Structure formats: C-alpha cells, structure tokens
Length: 214
Image 1: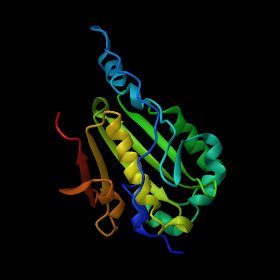
Image 2: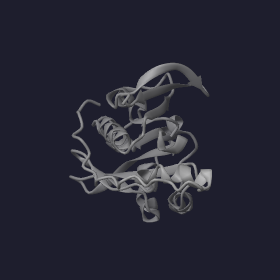
Image 3: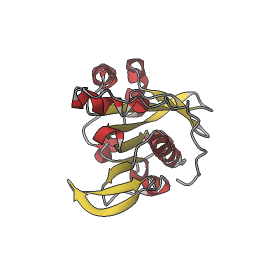
C-alpha cells in the first residue's frame, strides 16, 4: 500500500470518531505573586503537563514510552511515509534514543511536549502517533498525526485528529494549529474543525481552530 497524505499532517477516510474518554482535568492552581515568570507559565498548563491515556471508538491514545520504540520502528518503517513527514525511517535503537528525549520533555519550561502512540483496540497493536506542542501559557497547541502505511485509508487519521483536538480544547487550549502541505489531503484537519488560513510557513498552509470566546 502506498502512503497517502490524508494520514499525515503538520510536519510531523471517512468514519466519524466517537468522543475521547479522558480522566477529569485537575483544578487549576493559582500561581503565587512572586513566582518566576517561566515557572508561572508552566503552572497554567498543569492539566496538560503530561499526556494522559484516552480512547475513541477504535483507538487508545497511550502516552509515549521508550518501550514503544521497537514496535513503532515497524509502524513508521515505510520510506514512502517519510516523503510526507520528512527524514528517513529510524531503527529501534535510534527511535529509542529519540523517545528518551521526548519523554523527558521540553528543556524550555514554557513549552510542553505531549506525545501519544495510537493503539488499535480490535487488533491490540500500534498504528501511529499523535503529538501536540503546547505554548503561550497553555493557550496554543500545534498538533500532528501520523498513521503507518498499512493502516491508512480506514479513517484512523480523522478519528485521532478529532480526538486529539477535542482533548486539547477540553483542557483549556484556545487555539489549535496544524501545518499541512498544499499537495496533501487535509480531510483529517478539516474533520477536527480546523480551517485553512492565508498564512504559509515553509511551504505549508497554516490551519487553525479557535475555541469560542467566553
């Protein structure tokens, strides 16, 4: 099967997704008056400090762990997939080293990295990833999703994107952003409620969804 752009987005199908089931968000913590500004920015994203498990109709979003590297090396192993997401397939050892860095989190205290692997429940196997980079004091998240070539064309990108965006908006994010190459099919971004803007960055169109005011 040839990798298709419908299942990749944001530098990293047709079935509507059921809402994600997620644990309740922790109550916000008010920052003390004399807290360092960088530390205060992190406090505002307490509910997004670490990725939490969630599930949709067919997928489980499992927080990324180093132990996922071996299976994900197979999922992401098609060279054609990387014509959309960049780079080249990584072996298990290289991917393990990358996941160590991702799990450790961003070195910038004002940026939060959230990464999940997608487990297909009926088959109990990994089929892709979703990720969000949260900035602006927890108000903005840039998202991306990748589905392995063998599982494309079954609506998983749409289901994962809808679930991810809904989770972020439910945890206080106000603006969700994805960057999509104009040659790519953007059905997953559209299904998640994102709309294209006139902004182009590095040849990719910026898509956005803003939470309703108030």
